Image (cartoon, rainbow, N blue to C red):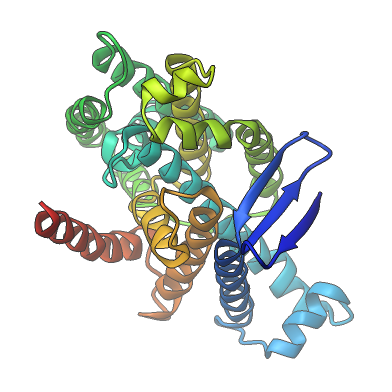
Length: 351
C-alpha cells in the first residue's frame, strides 16, 4: 500500500496493490485517525500495565518486544494482551459496522444494536447455550447464525419494494423487542447456574479471553475488511441518493444488501467473541465524523474511534471499582445512554 500527500488540496491518495483500490482521503481525516489510534495505543499500554500485578510502562514494552522477564512476559503477553488486542480490533469492527448501517439507512440512529442485529446474535447464542448445551465455539457459531438470521428477517419484512432506511430501523426496533422477550424467556426457563452464565455473557465482557479467540476473530474480520474495501466508494454514492448512484452504474439494491450483510457479519463476529456490546457501533461513527469533519459517515474515523472507545471502556470497567471488575457492556451502555440523549436533543433542535 502506498500513499501520496497533496498539501495544496489537503488530500492523501491511497493505493493498494493487493486489492487494486485507489482513493482520496482528506488530510484532516488522516490526522484524526492517526491521533485516535495513538491515544488508543496509549490506553492499551496503560491497560497492560495496570491490574492486580501492576507493571511499569517500560517493563510492559520490554515484555512485548523483548520478553526477557518471564513474569512480565506471562502477565502482559499471555494474560492481558489478548484482551487488550481484541478490545482494539473488535471496537474497530463495531465502529465500521455502525458506519455502514448509518450510511445505508441515512440515519444516525441506524446502529446494529438498535436495529436488532446484536439482539439476534444474542438469541442465537442463548439457544445454543441453554437449549443445546453447546460449548464456547458452538456458542460463537450460534451468535453468528442468530445475527445473520435476524438480519434476513428484518430485511424481508422491510423489503416490499426496496430497503428504506427509516422502514428498516422501525422494523428492526420491533424485531429487537420481540427477540429481547424471547431472550428473557430462555433465561427464565433455564436452571439457575446456566441462567446466571447466560445473563453474564449477555452483558458483554472481555474477561477471560485468550489467544484461542484472537486468531479466529482476526482472520474473519480481515476477510470482511478486504471485502469492504472495494465497496467503500459505492457506499458514498448510495448516500447521494439511489437515482444518482444508479446513473453511475451501481446496482443499488444488490449493493445495499451486501453492505447490510457486512455490517451484520462484523457485529456478529464481535458478539460471538464478547457477547453483545451496545452503543459502540452507534456512537463511534458520529463522533469520528464530527472530529474529522467529513460530509458523510467515514469508515476509517469510525474504526479508530470504535477502537478507542472500547479499549477505554474496558480499562474503566476494570479499574472503576477495583478489585471488582465490571462487564465492559455496563460501561458502554452508561456512556451510550448519554450519547443517545445528546443525539436526540441535537436532532430535535435541527428540526
